[in-house]
Amino acid sequence: MITLHFPAPFRHEHPPVRNVNEILDERASLGHRAADWVAATVGSWRFIIVQSVLLTIWVIINVVGVVRHWDPYPFILMNLLLSLQAAYTAPIIMMSQNREAERDRIEAHNDFLINQKAELEVRAVLEHLAAQDRALTIIHEQLDNLRADFERGRG
Image 1: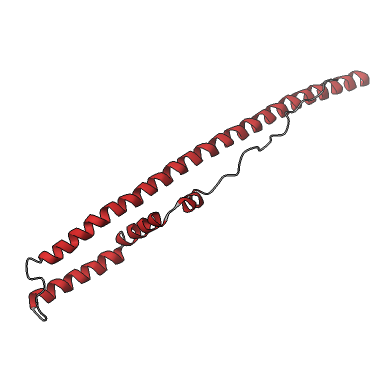
Image 2: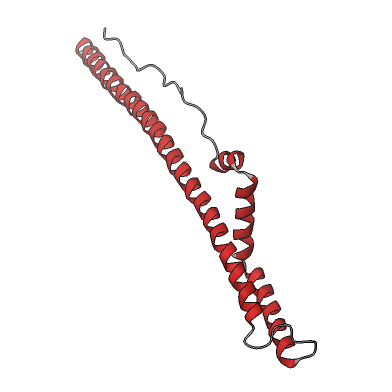
């Protein structure tokens, strides 16, 4: 009689998958968090609307002359303040973007590791299915032989 052989059960011997956001939160310094906050704030409609309202009020007050003109046309002080804002905001946003790029790299590496693990598990499943196919073939052959022996015995 033929014995059936099956592969050993697959052993999951890999570290658990970690959440990329948790990894980055562990690594985030106060500067990283501040850069992310500035990028989120400056990149919002709320910021654009508030800044537009403030600039409009600035222009109206200095053109109409309700109060003393501290920044008469062509609004050199306002231009200076906006330039300073841009000079500091751009590098801070770049820091936040660098952090996002780091997050993307970690996530891509994490995806690669998960794909490797999945490939090992798929191979194990395919080996097991192939062993089952071989076993079913042997069982069918034995059933055919038993049926043939039974029919010869009846005949």
